[in-house]
Length: 171
Image 1 (cartoon, rainbow, N blue to C red):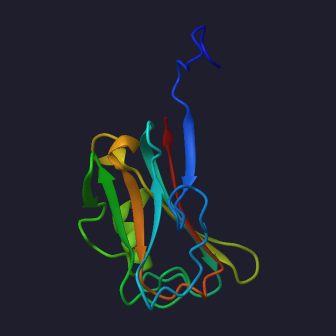
Image 2 (cartoon, helix red, strand yellow):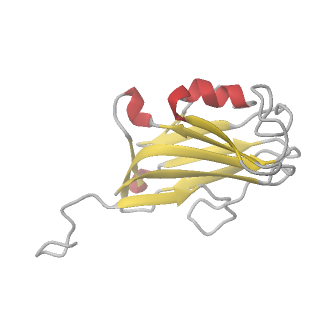
């Protein structure tokens, strides 16, 4: 609730999908074949805003074996997914330039925050969470310096049931 001068005294939570445009208007699903050319999905912070990112979540569902060597229920990826962050105008890797190629990489990202849920029938769900604050502070992203979180995809994800990524935090 706003205080007497019209501002909020408490942080305002946000939830944003990475999308093909970066501003929320693009495709949020990553179920497609990107093996021909690398494709970037981003969450770009709007100018004049500062986002404090506290959690990055990857969600995959579909049929198949969710073994350590698969990606979700499909075979190990050839190129993998690179996760990047731009903070204060400087681009860096969230995973030390290690590409996510299989389910075991999710475990290495954050073992206590990875789940594989087997639903009735042939569908399974993988949810992997990465918390920047586990390494000190949450990620502070400034729209005035063009900051963003990005996933670079360069494989075929068309056999997955669902595949998306989102960021949580506060403004």
